[in-house]
Length: 76
Image (tube, rainbow, N blue to C red; front, side, top):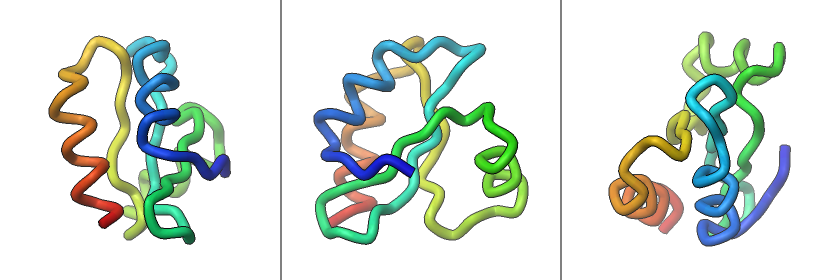
């Protein structure tokens, strides 16, 4: 997984398409999240298993303000 700030994660999400979304998980470091492509085999397994660290799966067609608020609430 790729640990990064919410700001950097939002940049990745803005560029993601509905066919290639980004899955966001709580990070091990406070204030950071892990953002990865949602379509990989391992990530799909985590999503389907209901990984407790999964915050959500997002793409650039979604409401960026709502996503940013969700991510901020999830990590602090």
